[in-house]
Length: 112
Image 1: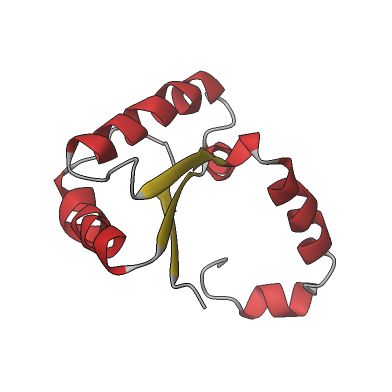
Image 2: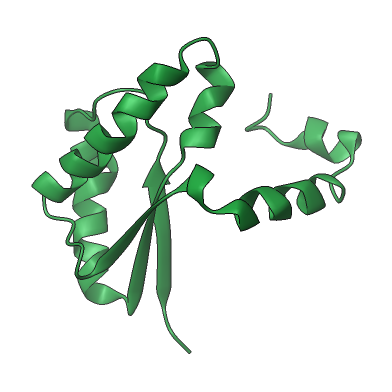
């Protein structure tokens, strides 16, 4: 069985030192330790609090990828993809939404 990493960022702005120390350095390390790595630019998720400025999100998609490449993520080791370009993600989201009750959602601390 393959060991796979799925990671990513919401393109809401330029990456900064906090991203580097908090997650990017770890991603660079993980791409050498795992069989496959996938990096999602979560542009649809970014629209949840940037719906009034979709151009900002669109522009930052490329900035986020370039920043990650600049600090060591390798396109030979990590597959980059944009969330909105994979229709199956939206299809699965609709199915999963039907499985989560309002009561369960209210108990989720990340939603509060």
